[in-house]
Structures are given as C-alpha cells and as structure tokens.
Image 1: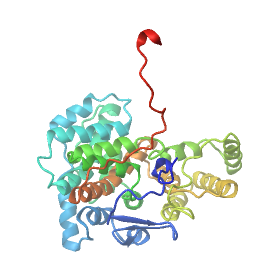
Image 2: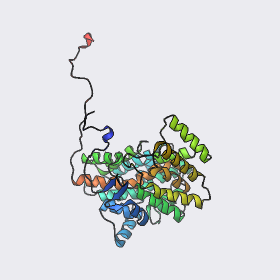
Image 3: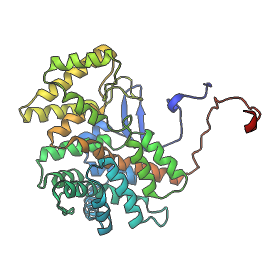
Length: 372
C-alpha cells in the first residue's frame, strides 16, 4: 500500500464542506458552527433540519412556517400506497424506506436540480408515513391516515406507531435523538450520496443511495445490535461474563468505538442521560444497569467508549419503539444531513472519481485457448 493510500480512506481528506465538523482533539461535533451539545439541549429537530438544509437557524416565524409546511407534506400519493402494500410483510424496514424513496421519485420526479430543498422537506416529512403505513397494513390490515396534527416529526412518528398521541417525554427524547443523528460529516452514507450527486443524478437517487449504504451493519444498525446484546442478559454479572466471552472469542461488540472519535463520542452522554431518566420513570433499571456494566467492561478491557447507538437502543426501547425501526429512525433524521450535502455538492460540483492502487499481476501475454 502506497504512502498516499489508506484502507477505507481513513483520515484522508476527500472534499470540502461547510456543513459539519468533527474536532477529534476535543471530541466535539458542530453543525454549521453550532455545538451538538447546545443544539441537543436548546433546539428542536425541525430547527436543526432547517439549519442543515437552509444554512441558518430559523427565527420564530420561519420555524412556525417550516413546521406548518412539513405538516402539509405528510400525505402519501395513492400510487405510493399501492407500492407499499405490494411489498412483502417480511421486508426489512430499511428496504421499505429505500423503495419508498425511489418510488416517490417516480411519482413526484425532480425536473431540474434547483429544488433540492423542497424535495428534502418532502422526504423528511413523509418517511414516517411511508414506514408506518406499510407497517400497519401488513400487521393489522389497516390503511392508516398519515396526516396528523402533531407538531413535530418525532410526535408524528410516535402517534402513527401507537395510534394515539405519545407521552410528551417520549416525544422529547425522540426529537433530541434525531438531532444527534442528523449529521456527521463524510460518513459512508453521506459520501455515497455525494458521489451520486456528483454525477448530476436526481435527488431521490442520491437519498436512495444513502439509505442503501446505511443499511449495511457496519454503518447503520449498531443500535439494533446493541438492543439484541443487552436483551440477552438477565443481570449485570451475566452481562459482564457474556461480554468477556465475546471478547475472548474476538467477536465484535456493536455500539462501541468510532472511526473518528478517540476520547469519547460527545453525543453518547446526552442520550445515556435520557436513557437513565426513562428507566427511572418506568421503575425498571435492568436494561440501563446492564448497559452500564457492558460500558464498564469495554472501557476496562478494550479502552473503547460507547457511541451514540449504544444508549439509543435502550432509550428507544423505553419509548415503545420496535427494534426493527431503530435504523429507519436513523434514516429519517440523517436525511437532513444527506440533503445538505447533496445541495452543497451540486453547488460546487466535480465528478467524484478517485483512483485505485493496482495490486494485480504484471502485464503478461495472452495465451490462446488451445495452448492453455
């Protein structure tokens, strides 16, 4: 491998962006200059979506107008409902969103490359509707109404999922988690979306590319794997013994470590705090205590810290969200970041076409078939 080649492009600069920065030295994350800690504490997900897609935080009127616009974009065309009904009941929910995005691009095509913001708004408003229309149709035979009066995307999701308005605390936790998931620089799915955008492909194709990339377990899905892990154990001691055995067998413990952060994911303490509050409110500390013991073992044995996905698992569980919907929620949140990057790529575009270091055989003469 040459000096200019890093496996997986680790540490290599592959472009320029004004959207997000990860400061490794301080293990900090910023969206357009704003700290993720401040955004998670003070801003709603819609404010963050507006910041990423439109480039600045909205004022009160802009935010009210934006929320109203998103509410008006929740409905699904009849042709898309038909597509969702035709998908098998055992389809992976990530494939439902991938197919729904692609189908919507056929039904409501992008006619030029100047309306990316409008398409981004349509997708983040309607992904809840796509996922949960499919879910209820195949689990109960109901064709649900997807246009609710819920004030934000998080409460809309929980209302559609449970068939009634959710506890305000659950709405708050989901809203905050979506802010934490909204953007993260040149991660795999974002870079894939930018590659597609660099070909001057349509917006729906860019987002479909990103969903397909996030579907891979080494990128998305760690929160689902974390839930599966912590659900295996009945006690903290059992969890410690189980994780120690996994490490002995050199098995991957999902939800720990990060390709970028070295001293800790700044998003993890935020969602961990809410996971603990939800556990206390439910008077059920078992999952949280097991999670914390696993965190202690991983720090002690491997010097690895939990990333955002690890405590998101128990937080989502306490909100009554099925595990199969954990990664689709990642999609709904991250569409804001993907959209911002597609728009940025289009604004100063050059086809992304890296080279590869060839490691195959040296040139050799062709041998006719009768001489082989």
